[in-house]
Length: 266
Image (tube, rainbow, N blue to C red; front, side):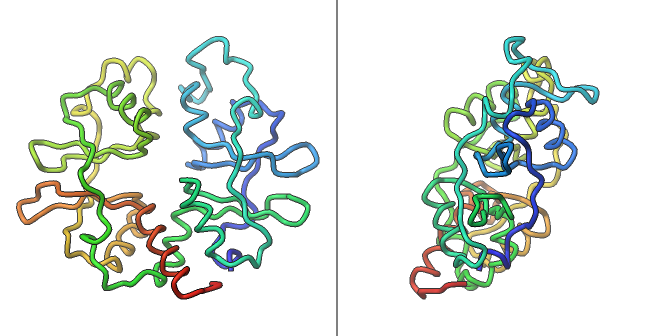
């Protein structure tokens, strides 16, 4: 059931509240999604970080818009429809199907009065439902090829434009043929506007790149994704050259396929 895996009692924002309030909540809690409610507590939609941080940034603890015309934006101005599932005891496959069909990485769980009672993210699903994947399946069977990549010499603004155009949340930065970094849309958007215009990817602080090989099992991949809280992993060959990429969405599709095959109501 969805209730077993969702995060209950999510933080909510009102549709008539200022966008600044939502932005500060997202920054403070490192949230990517906030369910939006009307004054009577019913679900209006979902606010995601893409909608928020395309319009402004938190600088020195304060929200600053990029365009002065957005200075008084309300949450209602940027909210979008949410993928939903009800009731709490709905089979998990209903939520996973909604994610895959709509290309979403979160669904809002509502009660019979359309009030949000939980949120299920792709990370929640992978963390709690990894056993639904055939664990001896290898990464080679699910990895995406070819991979969109950037170079360290490209600037942040160019990277963001490519990610917006292609709808990517992560992109691999290559040094030659070797993954040098994986950058996320959110991390780039959190740079102030001036830095985005002048900063090369090579000058950004980067962590260790979590790579996998084609023969890595999905069991091993799930463990690493959960432990490291990563949404994707570059796939490399024996020379550490990039040959593919695998993401949480790839795992969700496999989970849906298995649940459909088994007729599971998990």
